[in-house]
Image 1 (tube, one colour):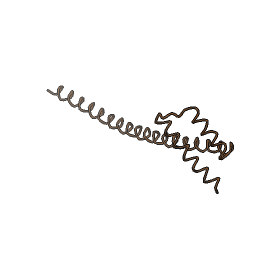
Image 2: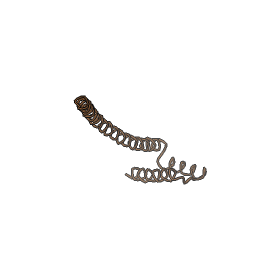
Image 3: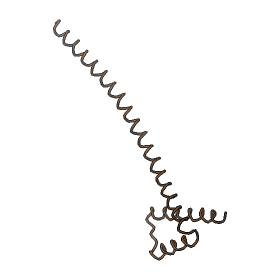
Image 4: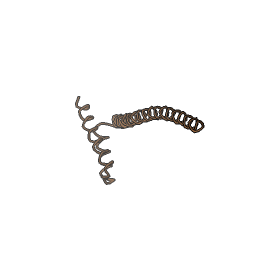
Length: 109
C-alpha cells in the first residue's frame, strides 16, 4: 500500500512537472537528473516505466477525446452543409420557375 501511495504521489509530481513544461518552466539538467534518480530509487525502473506508460495513455486518451470532438464537429458541419445544399436546390428550382413565368408573361404581352 505504501508503494501504491508513493506511486500516486510520484504520478501527481510527474503530472505537475508536465504542466510546468507545457507552461515553459524548464528545470536544469541537474534537477532533471535528481528527479530521475529519485524516481528510480523510490519506485524502481519497472514502476517508472509503468508510470510513463500510464502518462502516455492519459495523454492519448485526451488526444482521442479531442479528436472525437473534432469528428463530431465535422459531422455536424457536413449535416448543415447537406441541409444548405437542399435549400439551395429548392431555391434554384423556384428561381427557374419564376424565370419561366416571367418569360411566359413577356411573351403574352
